[in-house]
Amino acid sequence: MKQDYYEILGVSRDATQEEIKAAYRREALKHHPDRNKGDKEAERRFKEAAEAYEVLSNPEKRARYDRYGHEGLSRSGAAPGFSTVEDIFRHFGDIFGGGSIFDDLFGMGGGRRSGGGRGASLRCRVRISFEEMARGVEKTIGLRREERCGTCGGTGARPGSAPRTCPYCRGRGEIQQTHGFFAVRTVCPRCQGRGSVIEDPCPECRGAGRVRRARDLTVRIPAGIEDGTQIRISGEGDAGEQGGAPGDLYCQVLVEAHPFFTREGNDLYCEVPISFAQAALGARVEVPGISSTETLEIPRGTQSGSLFRIRGKGLPDVHGRGTGDLVVRVVVETPRKLTRRQEELLRELAKTEDENVSPRRRSFFEKIKERFGQEDERKERE
Ligand SMILES: [Zn+2]
Ligand SMILES: [Zn+2]
Image (cartoon, rainbow, N blue to C red; front, side):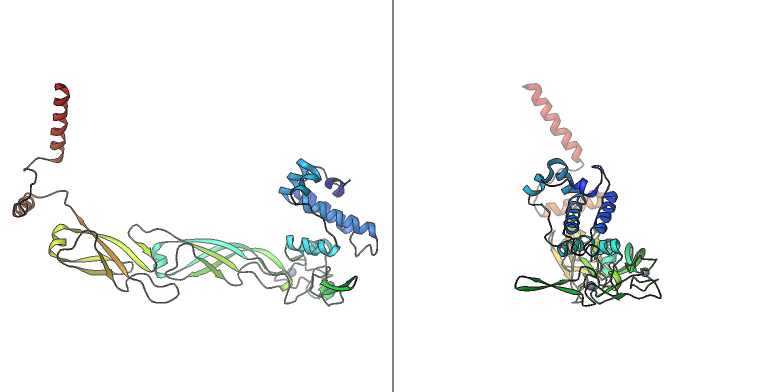
């Protein structure tokens, strides 16, 4: 019969996450193998506490445990259980990033070493306009991140003191254990492989070697970037623990749509209206490009919907490989209003084409009225 997880940690069933963490800290300290050398009972209690904490610190597992008890956890394959003390260190090292809970718990964070816990990578988003995309832009973004502690310079040790060689592994960073015929080397659980421990932690960062700060960062966004692209800014994530390497910052760039232009690859597309006379006779029209106004020669007899390509007036390639084209789609617009003179000329034109056009001075609405009138009459006859 397994003992209740809440009882193991000595907390009530409605304990908060902080209470659970504090209770685990207390239990783990009491039964820590370093303090109870060779005590099998202490080791069992240490493992039990870790198992209870593993479940109760995870809201999903905790909810399942609350409803179904131990059964609910084993059936779904979520049953915890640690075979060795090293397992526990490894496991919670993962959860808390570089074993920081044990640094917290026992004040045994290590000293500076090249492989000190690497900082987490961070993500952010930045929104830019289409024009900013076309010419490239610098944006300032606000972040909260872990930064190297200025008081201890990232070592985690109180200024004037220094990290000491780890007594557990004698500075080797790993320990060797014999299992039957095999000798297994594992990362030292006390110093997490750093080879050194801090006995007098820095008061500013409490031995972590880093502190949380708000920071404004300028991000250079290259011209021609595609909407949704993620830029990696190397080394601008969280600082590492105790002088470890920093993580990276991933910044996703969102490009706003433009009312006039769309893009396809590095080509810019736009639509330009021209008159029937321009389409028929040919014309020179001004086309507003993204950075300059271009002149486009429209040949005689241009059909509505024709595409014209202006070389090299599109978007710069984001990798610096040339520039796209500006592709103009011309649309022939039918005039909505005509002067008397224009109407005369159009009627002349229609005559030459021997086409049937509506008689003069009957507006569209008059025609509609006429048609509905006819229908009304027909209905009356029926
Ligand atoms: Zn510090
Ligand atoms: Zn060690």
